[in-house]
Length: 94
Figure 1: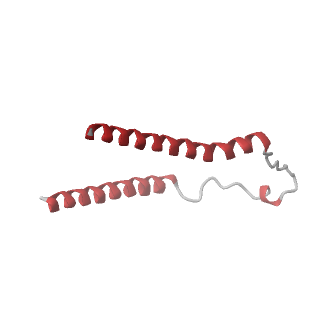
Figure 2: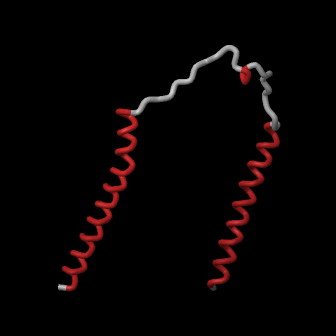
C-alpha cells in the first residue's frame, strides 16, 4: 500500500513537471510564432552621404596577440582557482 502511494506521488510529480514544461514552451513559443507571422522587420536604407561610412577603416585597435594572451591567461587563472577551491573544499570535509 505504501508502495502504491509512493508510485502515485511519483506519477503526480512527473505529470506536474511535464505540465510545467509544456506551459513554459508555450510561453516562449507563442511570442516567437506571433512575431514570425505578424511582425515586420525594420528596413534600414543605405545612404551614400552617411557620415559614419566616410571615416577611414581601421583594421584593429587591439593587437590579436594581446587578446590571445589575455584570453588564455584568464582561462588558466579561472581553472586554477576553481581547482584550488575544489581541493580545499574536499580536504575540509575529510
